[in-house]
Amino acid sequence: MQSSEILLIGNRVGKNARLRGELLARDYAIITASGSEDGLAKALSTKIEVVLNEVNSPGSGGLELLKRLHSAKPRLPVIIAARKLNEEDAIEAAKLGAYAYVAEPFELLKLVGLIGEAASCNRAGLPDSLLEISAEFKHVRLVGSSGAMRDLYSQIGRAADSSATVLIRGATGTGKELIARAVHQHSARAGERFVAVNCTSLAESLIESEMFGFEAGAFTGARARRLGWFEAADKGTLFLDEIGELKPETQVKLLRFLQERSIQRLGGRQEVTLDVRVVAATNRDLESAMKAGQFREDLFFRLSGFTIKSLALREHPEDIPELMRYFLGKWGKERKVQTISIHREAAEFLQTQPWPGNIRQLENAIYGAASLANGRPIKLRHLQLSSGAVRDLLSANGSRPREPLTDLFEKASAGKLPNLRAKFLAEKDRSLFEKAMELARRNKARAARLLGVTRKTLKAKLTEFGIR
Image 1: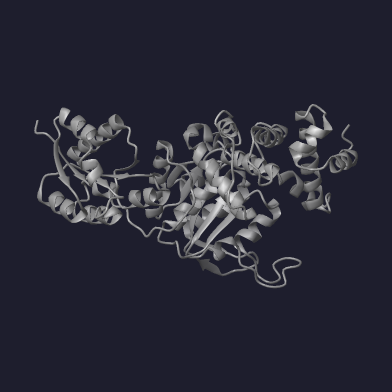
Image 2: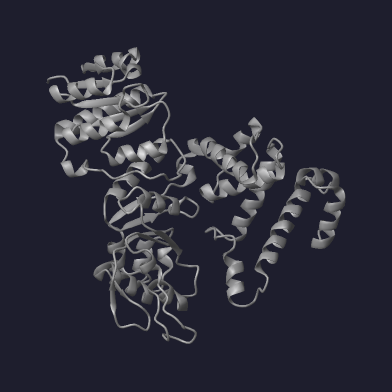
């Protein structure tokens, strides 16, 4: 069989002796190009089967070369190589038709295997439709450079290029709304509104009026017309979080919109035609819900035109250091702290925890530890105290973690909690002081140091909360 010709664009990949040796050992023919124009000319004039394009070197052309290659040869697999994986470029590359996006330092054998897979796919002849991905990139902040995250970026790029309804499935705290925003911001609708709604945030009696709007006089208190979520998102994207919690009556009305692309305001007679892309998310097992008659099969199939699975943190623990740096930087920016230090043992502690609440739990623990350190270097005890408090909250809420404020808001909605903010702050404060005393083994001086407060303040709080 004739050997495959591999085009290496860029000095680092072209002159990488180990890479060249592994490719030659597998009978690949190697062609090199130092820059984008030379690379494009060689790709168009020879029977290249795979391109490995280095995007960070001078003259490499970056993603612009990918666009030109894909336009001329849409079936030619192009692997993008970068010094550091950039989430923005990874998604953009996927949308422009890149076969894969890899970051240095390369795992050499994996890269060679990837080249082999790409060559096999090229010989098999992929349909052009699988590679035609293009749309303007907009910034979104997802964090991670693991293989699992690269696959997620690729899914987002392909979903963004599609006009299909998107269903994002995954556990609580895995960033489903971030994924939805990424799909919107990378799509042709990026300049329009993104409306995010949690389907459990309102009482069932209010869902219909909030979703579809109402006319003046539709019910007592409806003094003027009000637009609903769908009209607010016209020409843009409507994100419906926790879609699995909708009652059957509301499911029927949502299904009708997905079929007819029109709504009728509550109390109105006129049909309003809308152009809205729906992105839904759920942490629920919808297949079981359908078997139990709690979720409509026809709605499920309408929603899952394109399905994306969000990642539990245990599926990409190698991203924890990068997430830690991101959340600490975010905390520092909010608090106007220029430099944040963290002890090595504290950073290592983050990678040993199970994080059942996923990225949200990790973020809360890091924020709590940074707040406890109060600008000083973050120590192991700060993280132990903070992550312990978050873990206790999750345990108290059962195996399926709820949003921490959900119970309090439900009580407030029912008129049982007139001062929600004060109640929340008091409960949070109490948990903090209880945990500090526990970790300090009831030593008040040590607990005060942990919390960064005076012994006088500690004593007053212990008395206030009745902590013995």
